[in-house]
Length: 283
Image (tube, rainbow, N blue to C red):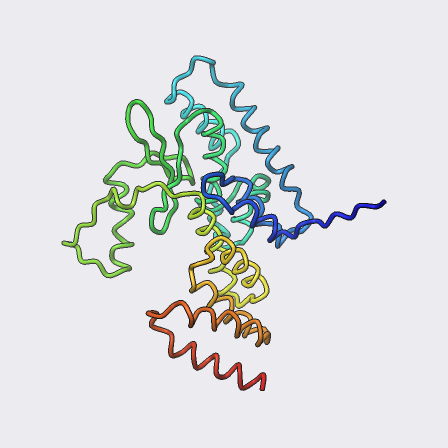
């Protein structure tokens, strides 16, 4: 008797990874994002590549090393020897969000570098976490000497003054007056793995939307909806992308889901008009 086994699709695989917040494999989920662009990607091989980097840095650290010594050794290895850094010449290349590519080029955006760095740091026993800082993803490490906040682009430690300075343009962008003080600590909360993957996907979403690359945008939206099934705006955005490529029925399903649940959104009237147009096109 021949047994037939179906290979899960990349989206099914991603769904299995992000089901539980309690057991959320951040690195594996991040690696899997490249499967839409690179269908032949071997996710397990990429994870093994990171494990090999971890083994290399472990060999450089004495068994009795303290957390600060481990942190310095990791930064020397990651930023100086391996030369991971920001892709300043091509910041909006989608490949900057794909861990498999970043491991090869060693060029990326902050969040992708952070995902790799944090995996190594945690493998060394460091208490390292991501921070969803506005405009620029950050990392923090808890040491006996205190908390260190770092820029993933170069491993630089940032003082409170540095962070406040980086926050100032974000305050101005959202219209906060200079005398409206928001405690800095609010922006230094740990970003859960689900939020980190959502931010990576939304970076890709912004790139594809700007280029009106609807097929790639739809693939990203599929993942966002699996990841955040009750964020109704993602259904709206997928529906509009489906409409842009002429898939009226799929567009209607998503836009009607949005209208049903997002009852206080400011764009309900505009979306309702779009739904009426799509229904007219089908009929």
